[in-house]
Image (tube, rainbow, N blue to C red):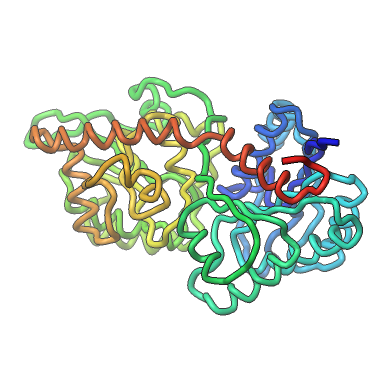
Length: 405
């Protein structure tokens, strides 16, 4: 009998948690539901104890929460606390009782290896026919040795992996773990609303359209730094770069600050950028995402660490040009453009040069910018959720003895 997978259990951050990890989990669940799968998400009640992380982890607006559940009809059970083994056992028992065909874990940080490992071990022990796979954003970073140990423990109970970049696959191969894997790059986010005219977006955000330079009105060109503000994302580098760009170029910063805002205010004051930087220190709900991207002429992501950026996926969905450091985009686009001035290092001078080149009126620079935008348009057609679901299907069939390949 050719048994297909219909019942799906997903483990990881989910709504109403903020941030990219939850957004990825939510969107995959939505796409799986569209194919007719019966999906349940088993998430976290709390990811960090309050004494470690004092910012609000979740969306608290009741209207936003109600709107999400009404729109997507997802079944989400947020029971686990990362530091409480009793909640892991409860979640594992609940998943086992549902008898899913497949369990999909979302792995991005080492301390979850123990949580996931215990859950996966319990499920495997009670029903060896359940296929368990993991979608992996990252295996290790600064603390490489201990993170390797954690991941190896987790991998004992996992039947296969999906890695979101070649870099993560390379990390996996260094561990000599004999388990199947596939590489599927982070798909696009297309769940947000449509763009609106730039003028309307600027009015909503209360931002000016023009600036006077030498007593002449000049259109302001806006660059956007979007999403949670964390140290590795390089906002400090972008501010330093902004000081060396044309004064008609302004910056919109939109997202929760997960580090002291004073660090950036000091840079802004020191470099005399106060009139060129607009900061929106808050979680940006789905309904407001199109407003910020409509206001922007260019999105900049000067990340200090190679990551799979969800922000690039929003930019691609909106056909918004972007400048980025060596994120996973370079893996995907390498054979589409031989050379580009818009994939940069973390040197502020190089970032400023890329921004100035993009907005330049010089004919050669215009050609460079046009080619880069064309390459991005090709990218938008590559990064699909269909490929992700196909990869899950391949790993399921590879690991399920009741399926004829």
